[in-house]
Length: 106
Length: 157
Image (tube, rainbow over the protein chains, first blue to last red):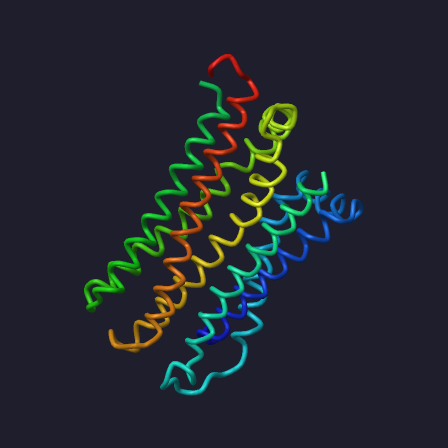
């Protein structure tokens, strides 16, 4: 297993997107919220565990292949870390926007 | 003092410690040398442990006290948006913080073979800055939520 900038970035991006999507679907669907509550007794604790599991599984899968010698930041995949930041900001904004709309709708 | 308040205090304290650790990492990366990057790696590990610990510290109290006791008070008070908007946003964005911190830490360890001139440090420092901003914004949101409870209780509390 060879952890690289690319694999760790991918793991973080996938985790953040999964948590965001699961949160939005859970808020919009009572059966999904019930499903999220079932394993731990609270949907938020389930999402806690889910985020760690998704990160580790994605990292393991993405780190499975061999990696070429790393030279420039583009070749090494270091620029992928930029996408982790961008995904975090966008997903945070999506969640904030969703809950603002939810409050405004009453 | 009820255990709930102790857990909330521990949650805030551990979370802010994690934020300060990543601020430390950021400063060490900006002024980087082999020695400062070694310190940055230690600070990053401490920060990741703290940021995961921040979530563990509040899990039980959130389920057993906030949901049954504080949340209904807030919803009946004059600041129901403190739960519907601030807490709902806070509890989910908080899940991103340890993941981004872990990503930055793994990248920091990965970069150590590339020397102090590696361009990767630019991107790692950006993630560290994001972790600091997000963690401190959690503290601000926590203040709004606790204010909503005090306002709901009333009586100049």
